[in-house]
Image 1: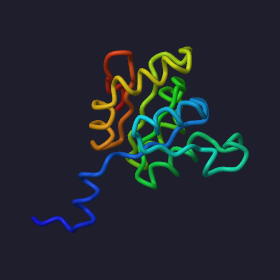
Image 2 (image 1 turned 120 degrees about the vertical axis):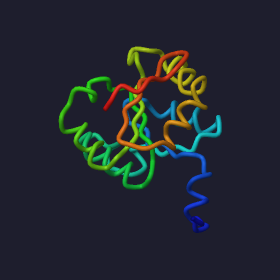
Image 3 (image 1 turned 180 degrees about the horizontal axis):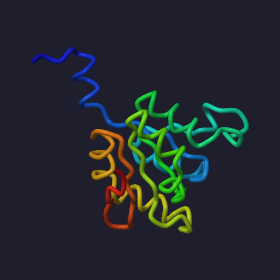
Image 4 (image 1 turned 45 degrees about the horizontal axis):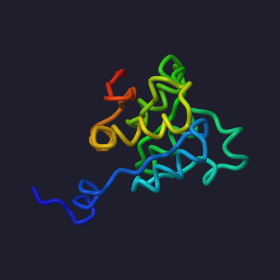
Length: 140
């Protein structure tokens, strides 16, 4: 089977990430400076996405082909958010500890960059937890 140029480009392209507002502006800036292709909710929804529901931003980001980054561990236990991720076959990453300092959050992402990028290119739906030294698929 021969892939079209567009399909081949998609397979070899670096993944893009949609960053939940809870990770903050600095996280997006630092990841972009480290070469990540990132998009902030604030750039796509009014009022920094404050009135945007989790299922809405999840579906929006996945529809655009982006993997999702958050620190909201509760998403793992919310039926509506998981249904949105399931329906859109999205891939999401959540920090294992949402109480880290900003620098630690950024370090967790960057230290696990290869694993995160590989998982982002994989099939969804999937929810991965990011630890200091590894990632682990936690759903489904």
